[in-house]
Length: 296
Image 1 (cartoon, rainbow, N blue to C red):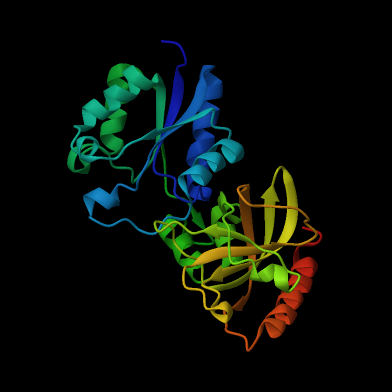
Image 2 (cartoon, one colour):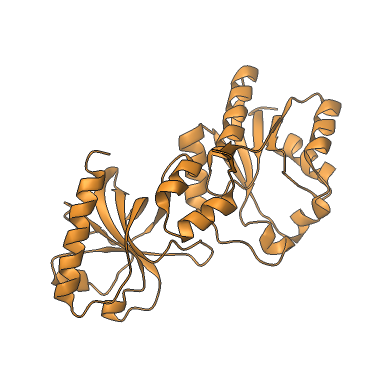
């Protein structure tokens, strides 16, 4: 079969350091065999169907796939639907599908990976399958940092607490969020602070409401940015969104794809007495952002 590849298996929410160990192993094994390196993941978190409710996700689907490719050199990422048919698929059939349809020349997973009907597939059965079919197989043990297990659950909690600095240590990269800039109420323009609005999908874990020192990437260029996560109480907003002021940017951002990189929580969201007080506070946030990130 053409396009044979070593496949890393998992959901990879956050693409954290634990996932990185798995993806690096996949890349190294693929290079050793002279084939491509790919990952197989799912379009929705399995818990959404298995448990009836999924945790808030660290990344959008687009960001998750992009991180796997850019940080760990995956040649491809296969996104499988996780529906009832997939949930009830016998574990042997799942692995045979990876070989016959996706050209699996080797398989890599974490020690706690489960697959197939009722989660009956595990790393031991994966190893047995690979021995039977003559495929290399690597099982990656759980990873820890300073004695703490690296997990999406832990990182999700840190993001929801606004602790982006600690989250970055466990992720191995800053937390990111990407989306298309949508129209807002344009009140920022009236105080000389035009902002770009990104809607936060319902399935995402929401960072602690407040203001963050960020960088923003748009059209291949990076800018320092002050980002508010919240509902904008000063102007009677309600829907939670990411509203960013890109420092030193001039132009129209509507409809453009914007990636925010979060570095530090600056202050909680609060309601100001008027727009002038809000403007002064945002200017102070901008000055702090320049000081924090100007050389980073």
